[in-house]
Length: 234
Ligand SMILES: [Zn+2]
Image (cartoon, rainbow, N blue to C red; front, side, top):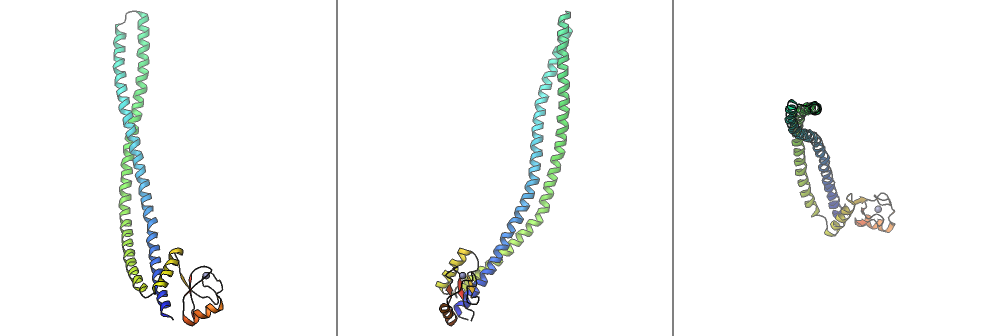
């Protein structure tokens, strides 16, 4: 085999190793995203529980303020009722007391409901915090494994790239430039053996004269149909 061709095929083999390692590295991405997606889901549930309970606590403070005002007002209503002498005034004062009493009952029951909701909210927050903590500790091992895998692949890649650079020094510059351009454009295999009388990639027939020249000299040619590099195996 012609020595340029031999060097180019060795380069292609090196590139295939690099491509496989690159693909392995890319495959780690979705695994990390999946871990992040899971953690985010748990963290969002916690955040929702926290903000709901915070809003309820705010409502409770408002309600407590209103309730305290209404209790004071009712004390005044009762004092007023005690002091009235005339029947007509007493009827009006009693209606006022009764109305205020209804409001106080409603507010007291609303306060109880909110207080129950807040207490449930705190339980829910604690549960979501536990869930997040256990998600984190479950993920720690997976994340370590992923990081170790990534580091391993990166070391292999560095070695493979160094080897490729070494192999490339044996390929003539003009051929290397063509090869790199084709690979860069297509991102895949750049050099093919003839398959019978045709291009091994696109099956377009190569004229007999060119084919004979390739066989005779071991020359590397470009397929005019698909642009890959071609070589004759005999
Ligand atoms: Zn072709």
